[in-house]
Length: 82
Image 1: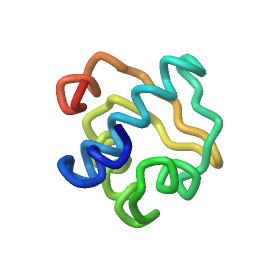
Image 2: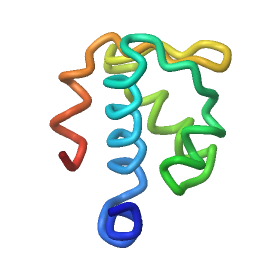
Image 3: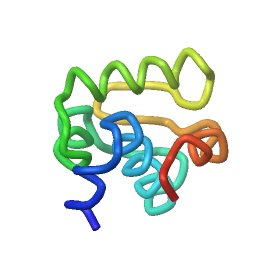
């Protein structure tokens, strides 16, 4: 599944998909840094930073030091592959 995602999904969609899964696992507070999320999504930290900043501007999440607070998990889902 992860290999298929790497080939067919954009980096943005992979980041949002992973973040959505982590939000289901951890709840509102995802205790991971951007580097960890980048590794899970198979992309660079710079890409994760760009995607998360865009989502923060939309109001769907807040960024903190080594944590991501998901404010609106439903808003992430339409952009994710599942």
